Length: 170
Image (cartoon, rainbow, N blue to C red; front, side, top):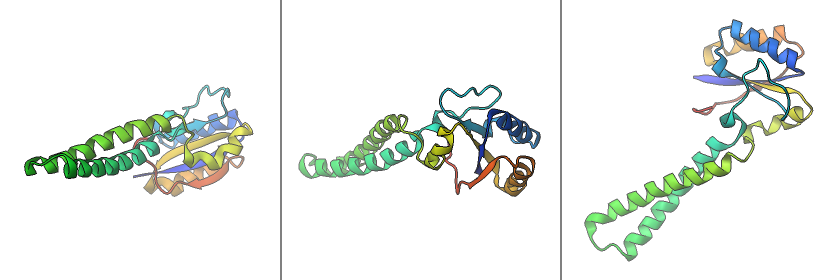
């Protein structure tokens, strides 16, 4: 299991040096992400993708749950009013729930991709000021080691804590 470390880097040179130090500490590049203000040059850094920048995953999860709930309710209403054969009642409710879940996840993920990540709201002011956010997904058993390394080698970086859990996808 991995935990996400957050650090605010003051400038691009500091961010590049931190990336190099994390790579030397054997943190894979695919687990290191940087987020900066639009238009900031990100050469040499692994820029955050849409899964990290947007609320796509959170939106899909909420849409899945609400769509399934609505699908089950509509399936129940349909069974009460239209389906008279006992053999198809359970299939109708379960099928409606599944279709509702898939439709809800699809629609909510389309909305979520257009919305900034709600977990990163606390860093918006720093990013708007031109600083760079580092997100490093570190194995839980190496968390203290990597955090101490970054604090020791990069006193200019602002340690902004650890995410209690990271989503499965980003």
